[in-house]
Amino acid sequence: MSGILRAARCLMSLLAPLTGNVSTGSVTATATSSPLVLPRNTYGVGILSGSLDPLTLVKTTAETTVTAGGTSVPIRSVLGGQRVNLAAGTTIRWDPAIPGLQPTAIVLAPGMTGGTQAVGFGAVAQVRLYESTGVEDLFKTGAGLFPALVLVWSGSDDDENVGRTTTLLRERWVLAVVASRTDGDETRRAEALQILEDASELIHKQSVVDGEVFTAPQPVLVNARSRIVSTSAAYIYGIQFSTVRSLEKHESRVFPAFEQVEAQWPLPGTPEASVVTDVVIPIPIPT
Image 1 (cartoon, helix red, strand yellow):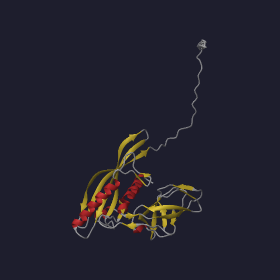
Image 2 (cartoon, rainbow, N blue to C red):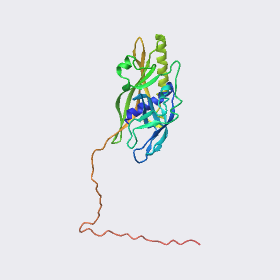
Image 3 (tube, helix red, strand yellow):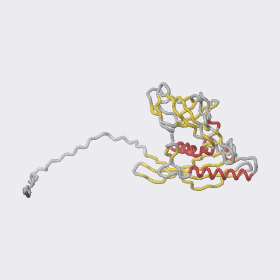
Image 4 (cartoon, rainbow, N blue to C red):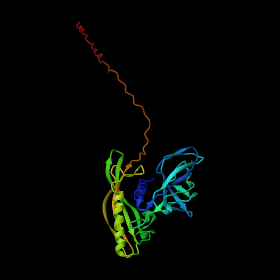
């Protein structure tokens, strides 16, 4: 998985409290041949009505050894809400695919349970990645359920060289707060600003979520906040922040194996080395 996508999913986990309670459950994962270790925080996406549903993103909660006969693996949803209460038998596709593992897993009975939708002023209906929303949806308030948070990766900057093969990159992000309400312009603006505050507090200075480090050596830094656009139907505000990751040089050169031998011998005409004999002086022991 790309470092950008992993950081994005970790940020979504940090924002989950705004959406409600997450759901938990188990899936049957199956190895293709030899047993393999499935790490904690391995991600999958639910398949609903024949299509991948990005709002049903799940991740494993414990390291598990998976066999070809099928193994129960504990999982939880990344976000909260009623939508993440997946019925037993629901198919989960591992994302990204994992070598040595069947591409899909099945939710075990009694299903994924415990997910509840946040309600009231400042509750967030969904958190989505920009790539799954689109620019027209973002600025024309077609993101679907509201209020919504849309996470946008805007680029990378060279932050610092660390050694010969490693560079620290500062990833730049924008978290768009999209509030679309029908009970008055003032209420829309107030709710958007409240979500802006709550989301800022949840991500600022964080670096680890569920045991997964997604920014190092510096935590999330909120740099600025601003209005992106306002319309008669919605307010969209933005939180600008950054994370840090390392970029390693890929070594493509091939070096032949070699042996290093060190030999020492005197040049012709060199006199033999002098040998110094230690002088031993006995010291009587007083009686």
